[in-house]
Image (cartoon, rainbow, N blue to C red; front, side, top):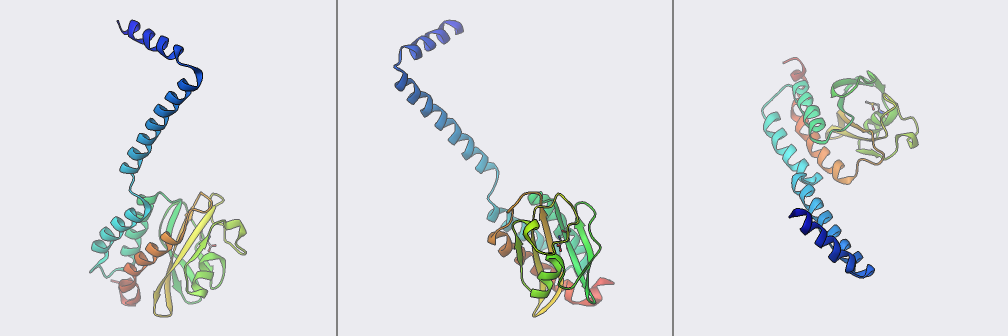
Length: 202
Ligand code: SME
């Protein structure tokens, strides 16, 4: 029975003129692919939506927690888990160097001097740096050969930088102004615990 129905459909398709048959196939292909895209978008909220959800949960986690290391550890883990970036972590200002803090990902360089690499430059310039292609950034410090693009966001207290949030991606051009905007909001969540220096010891 199934075979009879199937063969009659094939016969019908075969009697359609070529152009008409192509149009019918194109119509169904477009319809099916649109359905797949809508389904995918329904399952995966866009980047802004992901950041908003992430910030809401990080806010409740960090609010009232005075330990900067604990807060940085949870922030790094949550960003890594949400976006799957290659490396997410903090470097903390200690004297004239950045020293590796809580991170998620492969082992990384331990110390970075003021003004060196992307992290040291973001510290010196006191601003977020988006690096679409790390090979094109003069003085980039390659902790891993897999890193292709990077964003570094300073954690600020007025003009003072207390740490930097560093994120690496295996993809070129993985970060844009949306990332910069929301990652700066996330960096602000670290601020109260980081700038009360006693909290490193609590
Ligand atoms: N690429 C950074 C060094 C830190 S790692 O990426 C984890 C830089 O140039 O400062």
